[in-house]
Length: 383
Image (cartoon, rainbow, N blue to C red; front, side):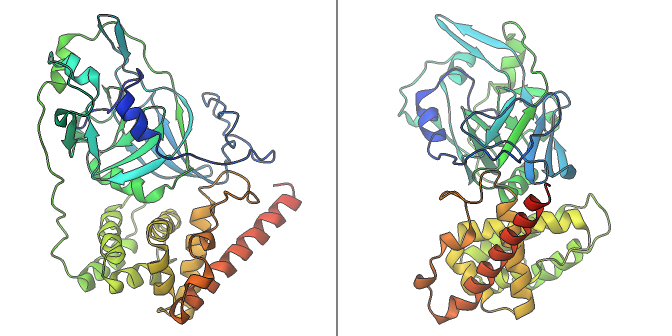
């Protein structure tokens, strides 16, 4: 199923699942929040959103998600958001809207399992099972990927892309499966997601709306159409797609996703191929987004990426290290000087590396030093 995993009424099991990670950060006075008047202030214990860094905007007025690099939209796509209807049963009430405000990525998953909440059984006129019942577990229920925001809210894929662009969910934010995977690679823990607009507040949900969720289908993740393409051919395909002139061409993202999965498994050629193409896209927005894929690869396989950096050319190594550091730090809106700041070198202590990883680690360290120096310069100039 593609429906939102949760309403705003607490579901204990899902609350435990969504509370598995925490976000850290200390507000930094020189970081202004976005100027959109619809943007709610971040929670007092979280950093404000910087308009010169990367973040996600979900606009419920037009049902659109935008991945932002400062004031520039790197890509945008239609989403499904909460209907605004209410479901009442006995003493319980569920409100199916998408709340506005600033939230932060807590964790993310590919092919996530949907743990079905109470409201689904109520809505479908079925007995509510115990929390540990296997009836609540549905593989493929949240599409190809999910980005969890906490507060019982997620951005996830859907098996009903024809409904995107409308208010059709129970509160969560639906994307096409292709764009859910894309967003999965773009963001990291701590990336701000700013939800703007006015969610509708409607009356009791009519049965005609509930009928959309009436059938409980057990689904499996769709097969990857590129699974049988050789790594060499995928890299050639990626070169062609990265060089495409269209600003909106996004086919490269799925090719990169496929190569990244192989590279983090056992395919060293795939990983080195991805790293060596850092900075390759001529399109600036595509180049910025490609760097987020490399940052994601590093966050999920730091040791493997560090060693792979050691095995590509020196110029390619420096470009890849710079891309990893830039993309990682531009999704972090907290202080650069806190213990929790996600400097990439923290993930791989140098003493754990043998000779095969030293050049890669030093390249990342150098990129971090350069990033910090640029930040200090901007701060001194009052930017």
